Amino acid sequence: MNSLIVPFANKFGANKSVRAISTGLMYTLPLTLGASIFSILASFPVPSINKWIVSTGLSSQFNSVMGGTLNIIALLIAFSIPYSYTKLLDKPNTNPLMAAFISVSSFVILMPQTVGKENLQALSYDYLGSSAMFVAIILGLIIARIYVRLSQNKKLRIKMPEGVPPMVSQSFEPIIISVLILIGIVILRIGMSYTTFGNVFNIIQYCVANPLAKLASSVPLLIMIGLLANLLFFFGIHPNAINSAMTPILMAMALANVKAFTVGGVLPYKTVMIVDSFLNNDAVGSTLSLLIAILLVCKSKRYRTFSKVAILPNFFNVNEPVVFGLPIMLNPILFIPFALSTVITGVIGYIGAASGFINYYNPVLALGLAPLWTIPKVFTAFFVMGWQGLVLRLVAMVVMILVYLPFVKILDKAELYSEKTDVILSN
Image (cartoon, rainbow, N blue to C red; front, side, top):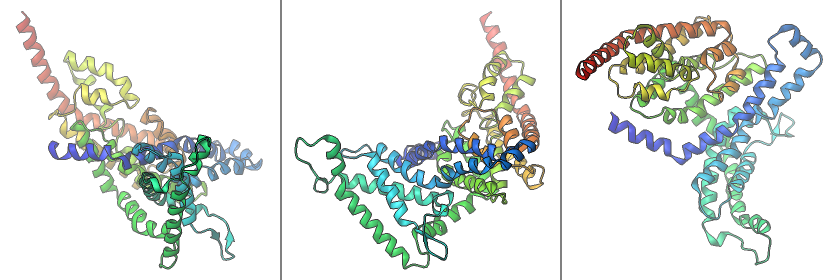
């Protein structure tokens, strides 16, 4: 398994397209966090304050922030991903900003530019927000690749005479390349207009985004993906190899929830996002529960000392010391509880959501807190899902402590024997 999974995961994680998507999405996180703050102010959880905010008109002003952030997230991604990808490709005679500009222009050219039966000239948020994310990702990667490839052709670069300022020369150099790409985009737009889909956005939504969202919204499949991530971590591979592939899909679902939440609608992916938040109840593998189990029953000096040192950073989701220092990696005794932790906590999260016990979920806060990964999970559970989320998180923690206990006792017994043997030999 190690010989099969490790090379694939390493190769996948090092893929420049995957890295460009991850980096490009990360660039948007400050804006999503800012949007979440204003969304909280617009729908303040204290009724008396919220009533005052609405009556003064501040609520609509705060909601306008959504129009400049989450509602144009695809447009932002159409800029950030080709920018990141061009930088990663690192070829001569290329400018990441130029690739990003061409990508944004191409993105807007491809979208419908009229709205309503009256065909008013306008751009709809439907083609700028979360529903268009996959178009932005795919288009951004393709445009960056074409731009970089064409930039290596000397015949396509306009060379200005000597003495022309560098900034002017750099502006003229990619003109032919830009025109060629835009001609291709216009041809694509015309071609799509003769299909039943009408435009690129509809065909990608139908062929790519909808199937992926449907696949990822399957709770059993989501739990299995979490299981695979834990298996990778057990073999020493960071689960980011899996998370990078899932991030665009989960982010699109999170943004769809945000869109519904801000207009008071039903959240389309509430259950699956709750389950996703429970897959790793504290850190990956529910290792906080493991450390608590060690402190409860272990008598060996090694494990007790290690747990006392590691428990504080682990509380803030710093997991590597436990995985590599205890260690969990390649430890056959801890393989079963570590690997199955996502299945157990994921099922607990699903029961809480499906039964209606967790009847509150704030997707705006969930999205806003996502970049702040060092916030303890018990706090995020309370903020995002109320006291019910906190209670269920603690229940899942207790369950995982009980699951880890018998395996911890086996570890402790072996370590106590080793410590006694060392004492005898030293005497």
